[in-house]
Image (cartoon, rainbow, N blue to C red; front, side, top):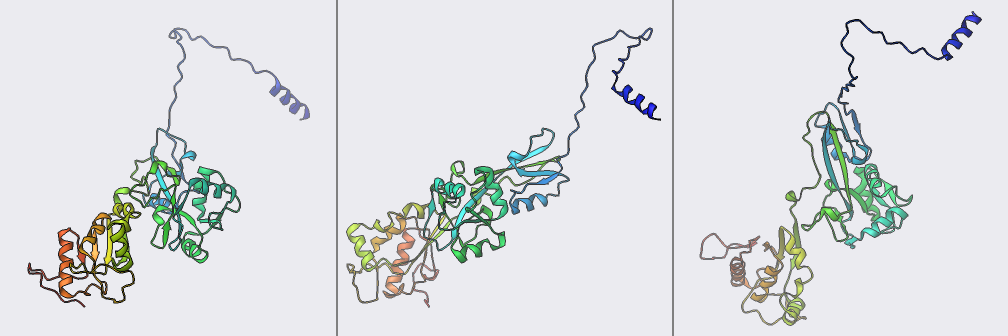
Length: 351
């Protein structure tokens, strides 16, 4: 048995004989060999990357594709035999709504990410998938730069300690304030996707044709509404307008107000032709505004005026009717007060 095993080992180590081609009589003349490759599409499988945000993950899962890959674009190898869709996802730098600061530069944000240079004294809050997505853009964050919080707890955590966060655009809600980055904000009409740093590209790849989202941001579906709060063009404000010009109060906010689809102003005070020259220290709390002040509203792009303020009736029916007629002349819709539907401008009931 031992001799037999040794013989097998030596025979395995010896050179193999090269087969001698056999010539078959009357066979066709030999030709040049041709290699034939058969390409079989490789199924995409089912893989979802760690950086994929929850809403995108859910949308693709609802498509009920038989197999697919959904991941950050650098991790998806191109395959001509598979259908492929690129998905652009927008993120936002946010803070609790009462935050005073309006924005940062990209250099400040990047330094906070790479070196832990805090933007407001504490780490940036975000969910784990957001951290993975931004790591593709900027490499791994500094140890002290980020704190991972589950999606459902982000808002409450941020409000409890006045922390800032980075979230996918679709997770915005009124209690968040969107901070600008180099003066760019995804909730502004002048938003420029090409110069905004918080964008991550994902790829959806499948063996079947796709009907999938291409982005979480569609500017055609964005409607902006600005509510200025109560306006009273009287006393010191009115006196300043007399000396510095009617449009002076709106000079620094004009562009923002004009940009909005709907700019809402709650104007408490009636316009009244007999209104006296304003005084900064007016003691009597019965007010009116010079009719020429309406130019301030038209200059800032007011779209609708609210008349529910408690001083609207300070000059009686005459002042109210004159005010409403001024709004009509300037094509300014109003609500919360008015006249009946006849042309006589008879006063309606005011509560």
